[in-house]
Image: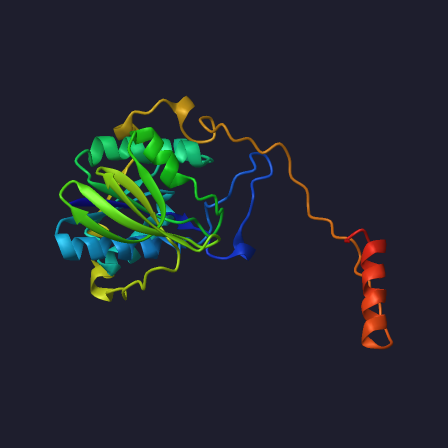
Length: 264
């Protein structure tokens, strides 16, 4: 079985996030990047399936060259090999254009894949779009919030949990398919230092020269999402009110104060 795991070389801290004022996109060049923390759940999920059923796990990422260390860490976890789609033409892509590149990379370099596994979301943009959009580009089924799976021939039986509703569901879908792994549902294995140090030879870097995609369909030019404008958040001045008296009287005063503020 051939399993592809998506990973994003993400900005690890919110304090390090910078936005290009002209394009409204994340600036990742020159910023230390790490493997998106929730992607480690996806990798562990994929490795468990490989350990149980055999096969190969391939990490796939679209990122600048500074995303290579993130892939090295995942190979250190046990991923067999990795592909990095990296080209200046891809810069500034929204999730739709990113999914387009990922889907076309799979079609050209991993056409015999059985399963695509993604993390639930990323820590720097938290859109949770990539799984569904890639499935759309490839024309295959997808299931979100998965925490367990079993393979039966060409069918994958997945369990997913909807936290807000507290509902546990079971789905059977034909492969190839895309599943998004519920964040925090796995216990990622430790990174082997020896595997990580030897990881560079297992990473294949490709550009749009190999993919041959229309420049109008990738990167910022191929992104339908437009940031119309940005402004710093403005917070109203904080008020401090001291309410004194018996508990019942204080409660009435509090309700009245909230009504005056328009909260109630």
